[in-house]
Image (cartoon, rainbow, N blue to C red; front, side):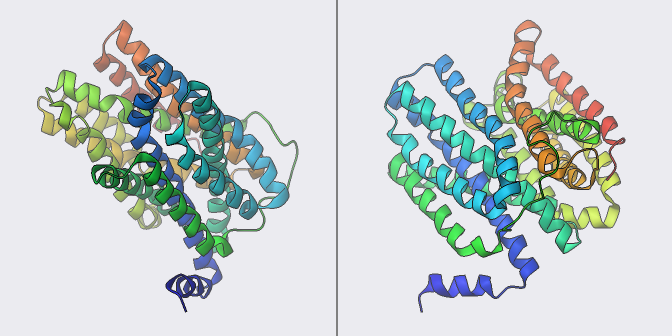
Amino acid sequence: MSDASSLDNSVACLPKKDREALSTRVMFFCSGLATAAWAGIIPIIKANTGIDDGTLGLLLLCLGMGAILSMPVAGAVATRVGCKLVLLVTLCVFSLLLMLLPLASSTVQLVLLLLGFGFGIGATDCVMNIQAILVEKRANKTLMSGFHGFYSLGGIAGAGIMVALLSAGVSAFHACVLIGLAMMASLMLIHKGLLPFANPKEGPSFALPKGAVLLIGVICFSFFLAEGTVLDWSGVYLTEYQGAAHANAVLGLFCFSITMTLGRLTGDKLTERLGARLVLTLGGLLACAGMFFAITAPVLHWALVGYALVGAGCSNIVPIMFSATGKQTSMPQAIAVPAVSTLGYIGVLAGPASVGQMAHFFSLPVALYAIAVLIAVATLLSLRVKI
C-alpha cells in the first residue's frame, strides 16, 4: 500500500469530529499558503509584464474585487449544495489559477486571472469560515482561533517555500505548480471531513448587515484594516522613521506575524481559561498599546517589540468575532458570515489606501496614530457584542 493511501486511511479512521476539525485546519492552511505564494511572485510578474507601480496597484484591486464579489455568492451556493462541494471547487480553481499567473504576459491576462484567483480565494475564505463555525458548534468547544492560526501558518509556510524554491533557481511557474499540486493533493486526503451541508437557507440570499452582524462586521473591518496597515506600511515606517536598512524592512511584519500565529494557535485554550470577553478586551488594548509603542519607540528594536504586541493583541479578535457571528440572531448565519467576511476584506483593501492618503496630507506617524485610535474604538464597540 502506498504512503498516500496509508495517510488517507489514517485520516479516514479519525473520529468524525476530529476529522472535521483537521479538514477545516487544512483549508485555512491552504488559503494562507496560496495567498503568500501569490505575494512571493508579484515582483516577478511585474517584471515579466513591464507594468508600473500604478498599474500594479489597480491590478491588485482586481484580486480584491474578485474576492469581495465572491463572498455573498459563495455563501448562497453553500446553503444549497453544502460546504464540501463549494470548497472542492474553489480550492481547485485558485490552485490552477495560481499555476497560470506566472505565465501572464499582458495586462488583460492579469486582470482576468486575478479576478478569478480573487474569486476563488474569497469564496474559499467565506465558506471555510461557515464550516469552521459549524464544526466548532458540533464539537462544543472553542476551536476558531486555532483554525485561523493555521491560516497564519500557511502564510508563513508559503513565504518560506517560495523564497527557498526561487533562491534554488526554480522558476516561478514551476514553484507555483508544486504548491498548487500540493494543495490539491491535500484536498484529496481531507475531503471526507468537509461538511456536505451548510446552514439552511433562511430569508434572502443577499442582505445588508444589520444589528449584531453590522457591529461585528465593523469590528472585523477595523482589525483587518489594522492588519493590512502593518502588512503594507510597517516596512516604510521602519526604514524612513527608524533608520532600518532596506534589508531589515520586513522585520516589523515578521515580528507581527510570529506573535499573531502563536497567539492564534494558543488562543482556544486561552479563551476557555479566561473567557472570550476578557481575551477580546485585553487583546484590543494590547494591540492599541503596541501600535502606539511602535510609533513612539526611540530605537528600531523597541519598534519591533511594538509590532510584536500588535500581532499578539490582534490574534484572537477576528476568530472570536466569527464565533460570535455563529451565535447572533440578528441575521441567518448563511448570509451573516458572507457579510462579515466582506466587510473584513474591505478593511484589508481600505487600510493601505487610507493610510497612504493620510500620510500624504499629514505624515505617516499621524496616519498610524489614527489606526491606533481606530483599534481602541473597535475594542470599545466589542463590549456590545454578545459572545
